[in-house]
Image 1 (cartoon, rainbow over the protein chains, first blue to last red):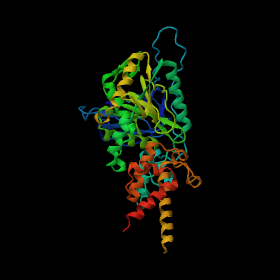
Image 2: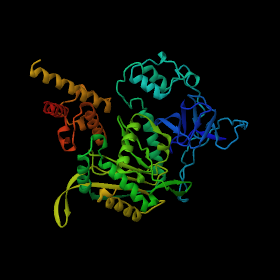
Image 3: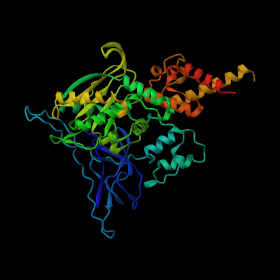
Image 4: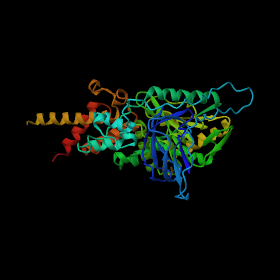
Length: 402
Length: 93
């Protein structure tokens, strides 16, 4: 029997509220299936299972707030005997968050408070049980939740119930709003993660200007023949170049945990996404190095849209192996990122500007981008960082090979 | 309807479509208070991904091809409406 736990969706998460089960007991699940929705400071997150099998039992009630690591359900794994007697269920035990890791033994580490998880918080009484997705949909369409019959656990209203309620009416067009996101809570989470990063990670910074005129020409030619929904943005080229450069520089891809660096074979690039009204999230685009530019672009669009509408999946929150932050076409020329722990690097791209540049001995106007790298000195040095950044720039000179 | 009335109706419809799609991207922005001559990227705070989504949505809604080369005409609300109106007019037999 395997336990399905309240996952840690980032260094800063201590507890989460289970808001919806998307499976029933007895359902078969496979690895990667979305089984529950959990509300965190970052909004509602869809939680995937890493364990295949059959849902045996739910251990936590909907609307309960429990610490990271609390078993939420039991999953009978494949191969386990069907007749097996259910093991006694351990009560949810508060699991302390991982203590902060300090690489250098001397000077003594400052007392960094990894606060204990808060005690279990019972479900709020009097609140109509409904999943955030259902609430959002109902709010978007101006539906009073009390007019809907819930089919979820304990009569909770789930997304499908609202959809069902709406099915008589013609679709009004999908409206996704981020207004439901608690931006103040998100700011607190960002502050906690960034403060921890600045306390623990000895950052070094590098910057490199590159000519992206070849990218612009290649994109203009390529996009001219494509309908808008298939067009590529320069940000997709940048992301792919970073992902590919990691093949030669794996020391920038992975996690620093328990006083050591664990490189990651998979390249899951965190994409920094601004949320309207002042929020930020950097969910992972999985296996970015193996995606074609077209698939990578679709993946980015999907990720941005889901992030802004609050439909990020748990693995996307918890497993980025490096982050890329792009300012896009507005703003300023360079950004100096703060590494998101436990990652060890963040690559920044400023906006594209036209600058005098020397090509083949002659000065001419070219499109130039300033790339930056923030690296973790516990893992790499400026020398390796410089080669990594230069490799990204080199890859961007030949966009058709990306 | 006179020619002028038809054009006015089309302009109103296009304006409504563009505002709806902008609202999908930036629901918190009060579009009634946007200067039709202001740079939308600044006024509505849209990034390149939002802009591509706007172009994609308008392409789907109107059927008008909006090549990248025409993006410079897509800077202001009035510019977008004028561009789409001209395209629709030229597409008519």
